[in-house]
Image 1: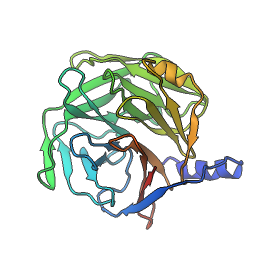
Image 2: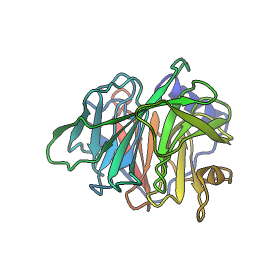
Image 3: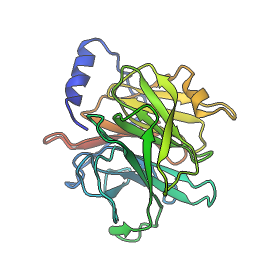
Image 4: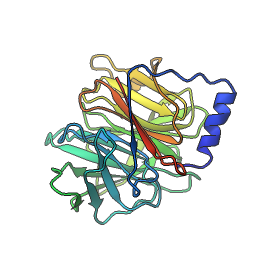
Length: 281
């Protein structure tokens, strides 16, 4: 969400924050007029090479597909839900059925005023048309154990189906876990499992094999490595590696590719400047 975010980036640069220069980078633009405030990014497991994204708060309840050229081949409308403040998206297989599912995080809360947040889940569908819809959607209501907070980063552990949310605004942000299986009948509690020594987290993702975690802020991308059978909490306790990242205007999305070999970032459209899609390998 905007809320002076670009000003924050400029101030951080002036203060001397070092941006990592990119190595092998592929760049394209996303000119779709409907996709003005892209916030969130995830790679499809059902259709390799396709990415999912969505608009920020107040947009339609629509998931947009992207290819690597920044084109939008299809739109998927979620029936019966609203976009209060969608901030991130993830894809993971259900541990029980092994079917790939899309998770949409309605987790934004600028003023920390919502008593609960929501994650919507639906099974991936073949992209057979340019405009499609889904109605079979699991709705997970979530409360944080230590009260409301703003968040823009969501990931789902591919090893066990746990939902992980990272808060945004604290000086040291919190990492919260909602264990699998999540309930559609009762409120799910998100328990704090880690604290990270930075702020302004805007996105996160985990590689398909569960080994590498990306956490994005306005100025950096950090990669955490999870060895063997370590938990997410144990992985986040380690010192991360700072990854290549080219500064974007209002960049609030990061995603591994479907093989976990490289990662994408996506910015919002700002004025006449189109949204930009980068791939780092």
